[in-house]
Image (tube, rainbow over all chains, first blue to last red; front, side, top):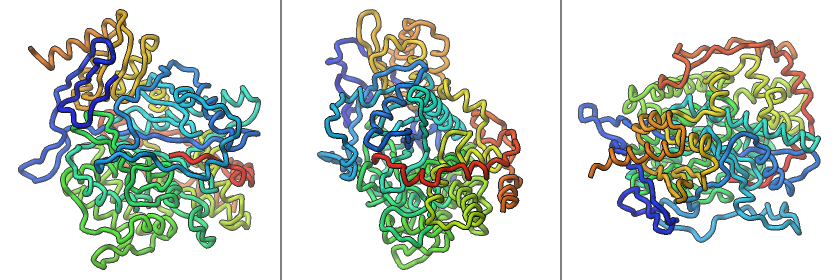
Length: 550
Length: 62
């Protein structure tokens, strides 16, 4: 199969080597964005696709870190629902940098070598990944010894939160099944650190206009991402890099592991702004912003705000916005903000001005309100919550303990610490930190808070239950889910941007690169009634004929 | 101190503006949620193994 070249003129697929007819769905693209002449402001006419990929921490009774690749594989394979088992890597190359080059190899953490067990036979890539593409459009697989759940593409915050939580429930069932198999305990943690210097990611993806200049993207995003943790941080007991014992609690799990401002790396020497260039859509029109600097959030509100504020910031950048304030050292800033839970630190920016992390966030929030208020319900909700959380943080951090993970965790742990005459350095405190992220509702401390009514909810349990099997109705994930649910036996492989399958003795490719616009919802409606693969092919062909009249 | 913890976990939660539930494009809503008595939170914390974090080792991920 030939991949779409990054300079291809259109999202068409060369299937010469595929040996069969190609199905090309040519969606009628709206312009991604336009400028309102009357207001001079940017309005979005496309519901942006976004998603979250979470690598879970895994602890298996009687097993060490050297066993975790096998344990992660076994856990993923204990999934019992319907799935397709081959991932389609068309157009994926994690070494490609949006700054216009491809690195020879990605950095890896040399410390991991200690966990490579001698004599362990090498597995094939597909065997090690053990992909499960699910009927809800999500991807479940083993990634570097961590069970990873990538939500389907969503375009509303509610859908995204529901699917993120659905991933927890699916993984929890896998863990329970695996525990039964081994007659031992299996715990999964939605966090980003092992407290010994190993970190694993929770990544966000935002499809965005490729025309946004890369240097502007980096310069505008770095200060935002370095300070977003004041409301999106998950909190952490202790410090793992540049250890300073006087730091008992910090805002972020991930800040310790940021090394550079921008880079294509993700496993080591991690950047604030990841420059990986894998659009998973037409590479001439789009890029996929791959944010790796964030924490895994247990709080639904924090998940929604993390993505909501970043989505607004992306829109600002697409509109040409770049803040005039830029920190002298954004990476050092991320660490210092994280290690100053009083939020009292000052940021020195180029030009000598000094401001707080809250004030820096207000620069983005204020600009977003001017340019984007009224552009969507999600935008308005995010703008209101953004102002409110910054106001509350400025008044008293305990006011946000009902929705900000680090504050909820800190309040809970401080009370326990005082009651039990412990200190932040007591081993119990990091264990409590870990327990906050346990996704088992009967054991996790976050879930204890939520069950007490102490945490704000964004979605209902019914919406989460529905998201376990149902894809979002208004994105291309609907089509991925439909194929998995109804035609899994005919599928060769499934990816973010395409499905290859067998039909009438030939190999076909359903190119979903173009399916990122608003008209996808209408296409999904046509697909909703299909019962056979022939029906599906008929819909695709009619769509093609409609979009490309002779 | 136990009382204080329970005060924490049972204190009223600020309410968000009323919105329609469901993913209908109206922005995130605050749905009605059951609020069972969860006075077992402290017990849950005391059940945590103090050595859990010390034993917890992972491979680096992305």
